[in-house]
Amino acid sequence: MSQKGIIINTSDSGHVDASDHAILFKAIFGVGGILNVGKKLEISKVNNNKIRIYDGVYMMSNGVPIRIEEYEDLTVASGTLGYKRKDIVVAEYIKNGLGEGNDIARIKIITGEYSVTSPTVPTLMNSSTTLQELLYTLTIEETTMNIDSKRPYILNGLNKAVFFEE
Image (cartoon, rainbow, N blue to C red; front, side, top):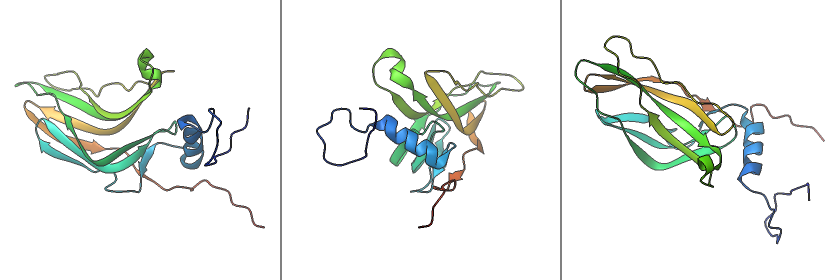
């Protein structure tokens, strides 16, 4: 069967799945960003080794949503005296779990490289199996961490929709 209806009662094992929803979400939103629900993935510093991301949904540009229900604490690697580092918080989608079978969609921290003077931001991965999108940048100076920048924006659903009059 090449057509799929989004219906409730069916015995069809090839029924609508997450890939069908991703196509729909990509068509509605068109780009990656934060949906206007909950605390909209607000970020705060808990301490120099922990950030907290509050409830909300990040819609990746490929149509895969990542939801945080109440809040998620993420661990920031400790800094080193005499060095600086830039870490990034990303939304990450890994198709087929890198061969493990299940897709992975998560928000995580990518630790940057140490530098005495000018640390660089880690490179985002965008391949046939892995997509990473920047959410926030963290600056680690010696043993002090600060939230440096906030990239995502709030998406308005149906902003590209076309409606027809009867």
